[in-house]
Length: 318
Ligand SMILES: NC(=O)c1ccc[n+]([C@@H]2O[C@H](COP(=O)([O-])OP(=O)(O)OC[C@H]3O[C@@H](n4cnc5c(N)ncnc54)[C@H](O)[C@@H]3O)[C@@H](O)[C@H]2O)c1
Image 1 (tube, rainbow, N blue to C red):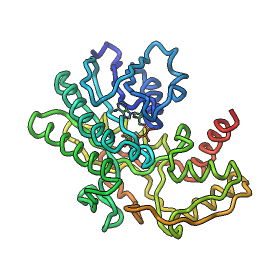
Image 2: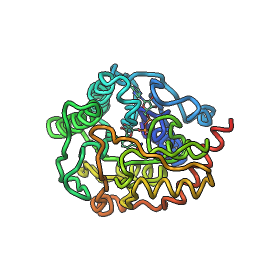
Image 3: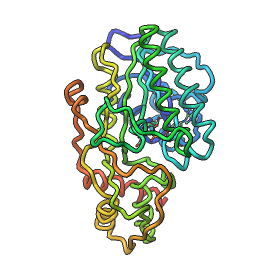
């Protein structure tokens, strides 16, 4: 389907979600046509409203757990609820989206003989016993816990991707995405960055689960999208899995203090019990992404938070 100008028709599943909408935008900016496939489970029309008038953008309401018959040159498979509140709401559907969704997208890629990229996750490492995590680490995952529908679903999806590659020669790319934040995150999805910002903007207590010493590394959405596009465009024999995340670690307490400073809120910090299976520490080793994709996150936490806070201020005042 390539025309003379190198324009591709790119399928983005989960394209109306947080990351998907930014990816659709980036691919359009890069001169491609985009087919956004989404069932609006957690994504919103608002996320892609500004793209609907673009003749290179097409929206297809579809659940990836059912086969998809369309044409295209590449597939980015992002469809899947990503926050614990959303993926634990209907865990059976979450596993189906991860596993059956992957089978359907791999089947489509096989029929069309095209590349397919899987949005995997740092959750495949579970509660890691090595730190930072390299791609060689196999993980420490509870197979029967409340997070397992997502963690094990994503692990099984990775297995399927690699078996389609080994067995059928399909060109695959697997990105292990670490905590990403930015505009268009859901205001009520329970993820720590959006939680803290929304609580701060409402002058409510900022809730830290546990004692606040657990760390996370936060990647700004523009950096992450850059990594995904570089991965898709990498040489055919580079499959990943490759970590994409920001290695700069912050404790939950430090994050709360930064949000308090940047919003100028009257909020105070309150502490609650840590939920089960919550990983204590997560930090990507990005050496592989740097070597293979020449990719490194550039946006500092403070700079990214300013943009994210501005987005939530506008959203909450609307
Ligand atoms: N945001 C992060 O920090 C992060 C971290 C690791 C991995 N990821 C992965 O990246 C992808 C996108 O995450 P996000 O943060 O944008 O989440 P999101 O919930 O904002 O987006 C997911 C999108 O998938 C759609 N979707 C869900 N089930 C579907 C189905 N059965 N059929 C079609 N569409 C479906 C939703 O409606 C939504 O638009 C997910 O696969 C997630 O696992 C995200």
